[in-house]
Image (cartoon, rainbow, N blue to C red; front, side, top):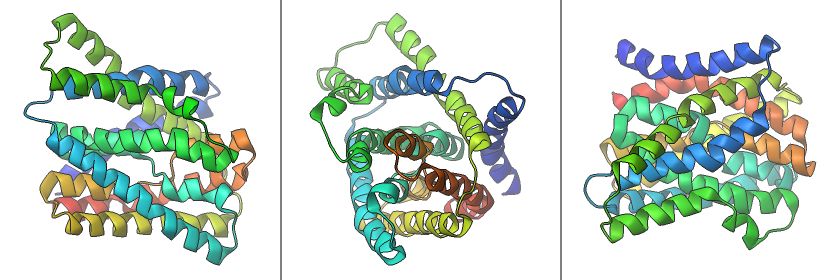
Length: 292
């Protein structure tokens, strides 16, 4: 079991560590360019390739996406109550509690823990998460929302096109599959390196507050994931992916949003840092629970 856990965690830690070392060595790493490549090309191509090559029907993928939506909706009232008790502004901190790091950490962990089947389900969770974060998350942070933001999200088109191709059983030329697979292949390693670079630049401001919110994010995620897996009767890989994705730490993108809209960026950065460090410490126990 130790060997299994090491095989899952080591690639994630090593790739994120490379990003951390790269940043600390004062080498150039243009975060906006990298995140733009991942968000606009890499992740959409990864989803497109996975869906058009998915064996069998899409029922499980769509059902899991619905459960992911329920999970994210469930985080909202819990987050409101916690922030109310702590007397913190929900516009500053609710996105941090609502949106876990299902991309940079979630996708690699689900892939290494549950192989291709886990990656497919994790992509369903990540798609719902990303679309809501780029729309609802932006609305919370900025105080205004727009359908334009939704229409500018490439993931929406990647899912829509691939589902339409599967529905009408349109065969894909080999060069299309190979090209999308090649572009999608950059997603996971770049996500992990970007995570490491981000952690290298963050600081734990207001440590007590960051610790409380970080523990809340991880514990809330675990309990919601566990509860929904029981409610929907999930077993095996589906149960593991749901709990794992729900229990991820605060997404780095929450810090970028808080920075862009002036929403307690220093405190949110501390929450990202502390929750990620706590996640690395608790990850072996979580994987042992899910795989044991």
